[in-house]
Length: 358
Image 1: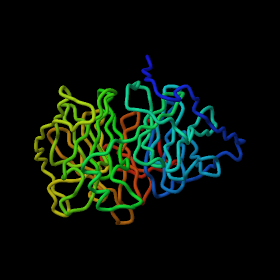
Image 2 (image 1 turned 90 degrees about the vertical axis):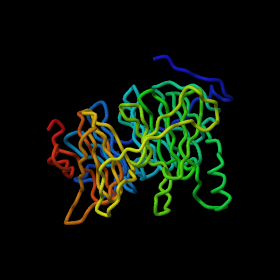
Image 3 (image 1 turned 135 degrees about the vertical axis):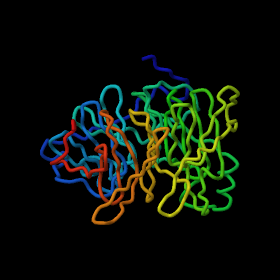
Image 4 (image 1 turned 60 degrees about the horizontal axis):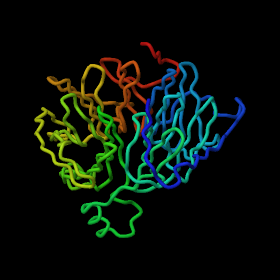
């Protein structure tokens, strides 16, 4: 695949890596179960399942054994927020304190000093990271160099900074990264709306109702989803958006129109719409929306279904939804590990009972 590069100062610097080489006995450890608090799930090209956790590192399940890796094994942080894979089969872990990757069974570290650069062309194979450890920026890795892109400010974000000066958090903190069907990158922020970057134009969209709940709480842009008709869903089910991609000008706000969805939602709390943390479209073209504590909703274009995950008669708080390479839907939770959908209900993952081809 042709790699698009653009000029910037220091581009010829090689990204430094640290090689953490351990013996098979000391490198990671076999465990029987996942921890309760999970953030992300990934199914790699070799069939391994990876589970990123909050506070307990990352787990790898090869169909037989569940292996746990933590900071003592070379992880930069035991909080793993995103897992990706490049075309060579290397597994990348976006942690709270930097980026690790696995190559040939060894855990290595990408440079903590990425090259500052300007927004420009990128290749579809490039990897993007949310830079939780590098505020108000996203990172791009092209296989050789790690680049840092600072988000430009906007009136909404700047007004919040003036209201809350000196806060540890920023309205420009990265909440989500999403690539649509054309490979365009969408960057969701905590309070400053969503940015769209197509390799040429960087634009911005903000509406009060996609970042703030009706009760007045700040939700942020935690999830973006493009449906099969080309509409975009931002964090909630009230509207879908049509984006004008013809009349773009770098740094300007996006032109758009919106349509009310009118989905027949009725939650246990009587709400007629939901704010979702995570979303996807499965292999059957069904849309899935995951909420923190109001269940999982799926819509096939005609029918709307609702699922809840319970354990010991307690409804479990959820975090993210994911599909593996076999089309199976998975959920990471904050309180009860990982669960997967068996076609009728969500079942808790157990390494001793799970069959990857079931």
